[in-house]
Image (cartoon, rainbow, N blue to C red; front, side, top):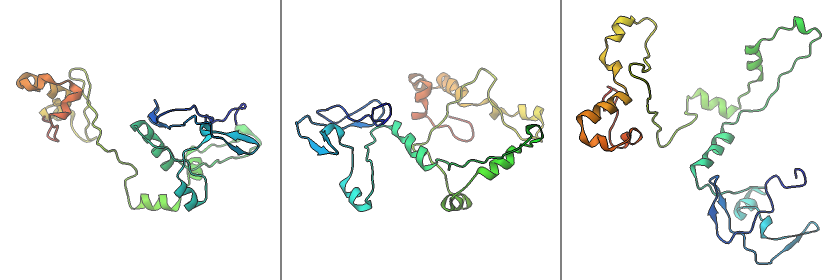
Length: 203
């Protein structure tokens, strides 16, 4: 309870049908049928029922809140809980603040902690995350101001002579609009659905 109200927004409102709310979760059907149950000196109705799975409750003998995810917005909770770092605090008591030496690197190393499963996962170089379907970033830049990457020992005059550096997704999109009439039907964001960008830098 926070300020006299349940922080999980109970009691919920009555609802005749299950529907999707704006956050991507389901607003479950809670019928106003007049049925009540006397629990801990209070009468509770359908507005107080927490979504649950009876099989899981009996199997694990613990509180398990079950929610149906109906939208991509709910995916954030997968990353929030699976890749949540462990809580740890490093502190130091000193007498003279002027003489204190703060080593931020050492403090980070002392405070970081990996569990055995997490360490094994990293030792074997397994993927920590995947994006499915693949997400492609569409390049945006002003004329002749595209991003160019190069090695430290490369000579810039020779680098600028390479023609493929002038080909980007955006420039090739405009070029395809010149040579292909079908390309004019698609916006830049729709272009990937009909054309393929390969490693050689051509659509």
